[in-house]
Image (cartoon, rainbow, N blue to C red; front, top):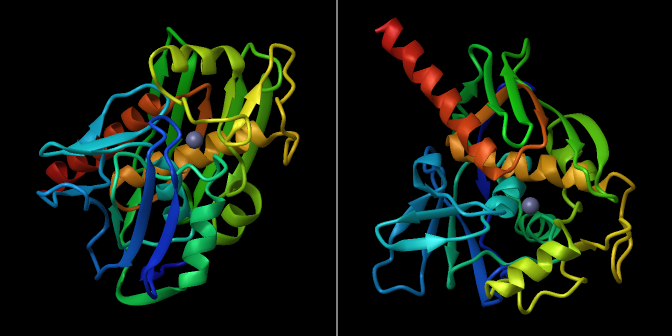
Length: 290
Ligand SMILES: [Zn+2]
């Protein structure tokens, strides 16, 4: 990946839909923003129009999704729209939303990609700063077997290799290695949908989540590993979605991340921890250099 300038949308892009967990109808409006603005959410349905930067400092731990909150305002399931923005190399954007959760679409990032591509993308004046992995960093969770290793790359690219090894049929063993560019993101990742097991859907419904969600809104696997009322877009759609989720969470570093990343069995909290660790090492380096 060569050095590039910061990028934003040419004009506003709108995405309508309902959230996966809470089922509220929402409009998400993506607006152009100036150099160094970053990706920043704003809840426009609340009287205090609080800005919530898409940064790991504002993560509120919640299962199965990434949630950001600041000064009493919260926005949930932010990972897929952030993946679309990072995947299309958009550094600056205001994400105005009139509800608590980003629209789900079909559970992938494709609806965001289509809206962004229809609006157009423009180059700005300043170079896009790199947040490179400067030393090897690992996140290991012995309890779940989740593991991330991030190491420096020779180039300025973002390289992700991911191994999904879950004990459940349908999404048990899949692996994929990819260098992320706008082309590879659109071609290989953007259409990969959220997946869940039927038993997990029942558990979520029991606590009041996902009540308006149907098997058409995401991939639901039955106990034999077959998608219910749905067909896979790729045999390894699940691992592609896992990488898409990682990309969305890496956006929380607040810059253009580069390095070699190798992940296994991770969830959002491991992705967030990896971002924190990378930011810590960068801070440490700056302190040592000062
Ligand atoms: Zn996801």
